[in-house]
Image 1: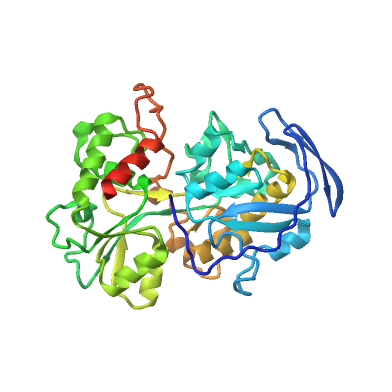
Image 2: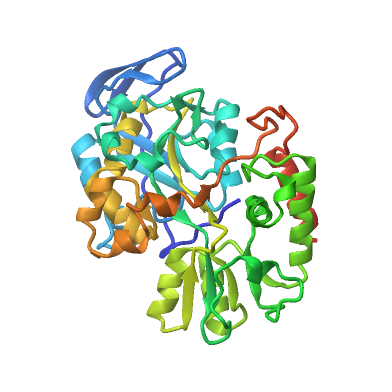
Length: 399
């Protein structure tokens, strides 16, 4: 349910479609000639072939830039020239929109967030990825590999794009003393009532669970995305109480930025990008990773089970996590890159430090978004609340 309206409005580029095939073996015609694609029974590639001449993607705004929005922002033109994979991008505003688009079968891949990845896997709309065919995967930070939001039964269903934490931000001229705990946004008697802001998504229920995990040990919350009835009920109850002090919910970074700049919000959840923009605008704000830890996100490039251009998709995944391209997209979007070698080539030499890219101790405190499922993943069995129940509860919370 995540909205991304970052930096510039991303327009679609010219559409060029090529290729057809079945699930097991494909003969794809392209500008480069005839190429064969061999897949295993689970749909992953056995051997990488030549590009099919086209690539159709679903992505968050700012992830696939070819210079059409800003001539200075381009990590796709050379890729297209080198591979012949003419790329068309459909920008999606939410995870739900991405899932709907993937079901249509007209796309080769998607940059899915953790609140969507398991849903795509369970629906069989994506296939496992053969990481051996993606050389740059070797340089991905170990902390981003084999994560529960994109790896099932030991099979990788995608390539990590980057990661970020959901931080606590506050106006330094309004909120004193400087908070070090999420308690400042959960206090029903908050002195900042009406000026607290929160992220607008069902996945935000996990933020309540995170706080309860630290403050209500009797609930025995371990994984904040695996909540049984009592744990879920307590999280929802906390969010309903918080509703009385929240002035604005946000899912668009620009809305959050404007709210803090105008003083309508003085404390709440944020992304580092928003904090950077406010600092640049000389708005007195600061961020912290509270003592309870935080939730966070890591997007994954996933291959459609109906991909007409799987070779181009693999070539793209290797490109987007190459040191140079991954550094560029991480800086443009505002996140930690996935490739460890990207830190040496960022334009801003402090970028990786700012986003804690190589700080695994930092990210050990960040619970990356994962799609809630009925199966708890432990001895409790299938008694946890799945994502549809989180959606229903969020509707009730918001009123």
